[in-house]
Image (tube, rainbow, N blue to C red; front, side):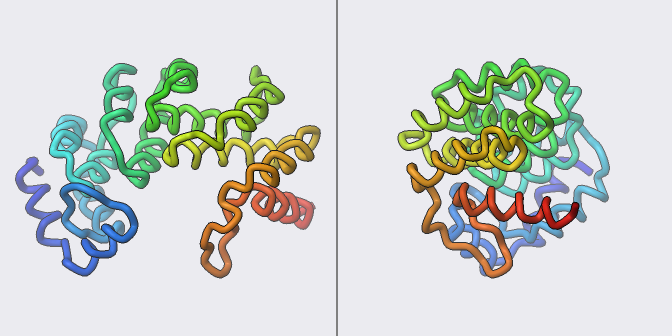
Length: 224
């Protein structure tokens, strides 16, 4: 499938209703209004096409970048290319897909994590904290958790919204996976109050760290 054919498919699948909904959810810039399931269907038709993925990414529209993420080969990106992609994006959903399907599979993700953790760029820092949260959840080997909690306590209140979200994930991950640091993680979450009043759908867990931590710990206990 060529770039023009891919974009025509996305255009044909779009709707005014979904475009309006996306805007309400914070999507800015060019978009087609395509359902996520339809984007995945087009990706399955393409399978893997790294050259096309790079062209789709450069197109810059919301759905083109999501499609690009699904059909690219993470290991064919240099660390410098991936860093530019992370910094070029401004949308949370694109950042989340890029993190899950590309960044976390990249062979130099630890080098990038360290670089991004020292960055003032909101999307780079978001990616750095996301990778840190992943490491915390997998055992945190080599990480100084007290120092990470110090940073979270100090930096979260003034962090950009994009970064604050994954910083909060890291805070919750400490509390969920490391009982020896749970009391402090809970105390930090309570004191900062970030996402305390975040609207949450019925059946979903609140992103407010103390609720999130306690809910996940309770589930873990129930499985024993």
